[in-house]
Length: 505
Image (cartoon, rainbow, N blue to C red):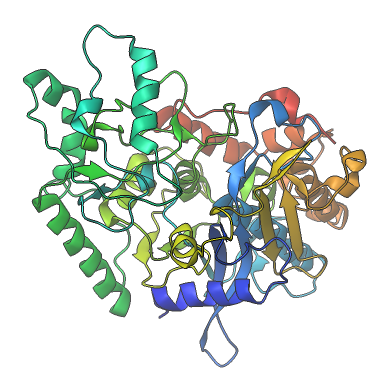
């Protein structure tokens, strides 16, 4: 049985073996890392772990930059990059299976034209940092060392009779301000709270402090060393809840429009928990749901997506999620990734609620923000996300790396959603596309379709006149039914892309 440290070490090692292009400058730039690891058995019955997809990145594009051609990456967070790279990998593995070339992942299913994951093969997900969104809203002690921002002081409470919108903006700025990139740890003034103030943040405080009394639904029970790790993490959470919690780690992800908002009150009252959130863009809203929300969704729908579900007898799930060393709470991860969807029912055949095992590694990513700030030297410029080089006409370029275990062009480096280094003249052409953008993954799927004998086509694709990306997604009936059940029962405010953005060929 693998351990969390073994998985993180494997992922860090794979990243170190990649070429320098797109990587952060040591001591000045930081990034996040995520990966998909395939676990299987070797011919001599030894367990083998292999990184099959890896991604880095921290940014999303705004709504106005989205393309109706499907040729730009909307979401370049590491977790999303790693998952999209894994879809490239699974598509190639299905092509090998269909062509009789010996896939190491799939074998023939019981239904005509359907395939299933081989016995003994499973996938787990690694991320170097707690996923953005709900999983990052973690209770903390005031003297903890990894605070992402300063605690809010008592004088930041919104006074009665003021302009609430302006005060919320000022409150957020005061709460998140840092000086020269250095986190400070001032002493928090503990105000006496009125009954009204306690009621305002009451549900949130109960969420954070009573979790030990009302344990959420558990993920599958781990064995061996991982079991001990989970016990230690839960004991640490219980110690925190029994002590005087005064603040929480914060997420930059915003509550989805049309739903509850964050109170933005001091300390524990800053965020509401359990809500869907969208990732922040550069100056404008995005349609990209947080990584916490997407991971929770994949635990119900699988991570294979709608297109590949045509070929699969059942959804493909992550058996575990491993997080690197960073601010972390097992109870918060349980709430964000598992509990929110644990009661979803009436799913079609091939789909189920599949809670992953949750583990944390003791090994930190060398290019994390905390490590980069620690190793930063005067005169090297301010610490910033990887690729944040401001060009006079085009602005900052945020880079992301995708690598996956495919035979052709495994490495794909992008900047602001397009292939890194592409000229402005090439934008809108195939030369500018990332290999994991929607249209490229769609074309890979169409290539899989082209090599499939018509007599072995999945039932959902027979006798239909399909042309666009939207068409092929919509006729994946079982997947769409599962998605509908998830939205109606757990995530009714889930944002959906406009149909006009999905009508490409």
